[in-house]
Image (cartoon, rainbow, N blue to C red):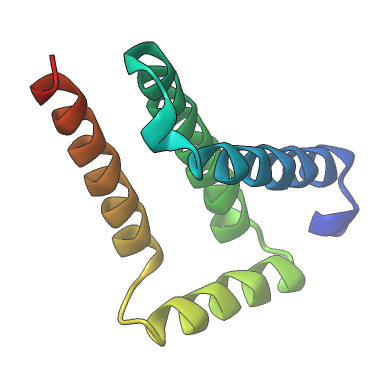
Amino acid sequence: MPFFDSEIVQEESKRLFTDYQQLMALGGDYGKFDREGKKLFIERMEELMDRYRVFMKRFELSEDFQAKLTVEQLRTQLGQFGLTPDGMFAQMNLTLERMKSELEASR
C-alpha cells in the first residue's frame, strides 16, 4: 500500500496539523499566560515535537517513492534556511529550553 494511502498516516498527519495550528494560535497569547499556562504550553509543544519527529522518521524509513520525495522536499526547503531536519528539531528544542529557563527564572 502506498505510504499516503495508509489511514494511520492520514490520521496522524491531520492531527499533527490541527494540533500545531491550535498551539500556534494559543502561542500568540503566551505572554499573557500565568505560570501554569506557560508550563502547559511548553509541555504541549514538546509532545507535538516528539510526535512530529516520529512521524518524520516514518517517512525516512519508508520505501515508498512519495514518502522519500517528501523527505527530500523538506530537506531542500530547510536547506534554503541553512537547516537540516535534525537542525530544525534542535532549534525547536533550544527554544523550548529557553522558554523553560525563563519560566524558572521568573519564580
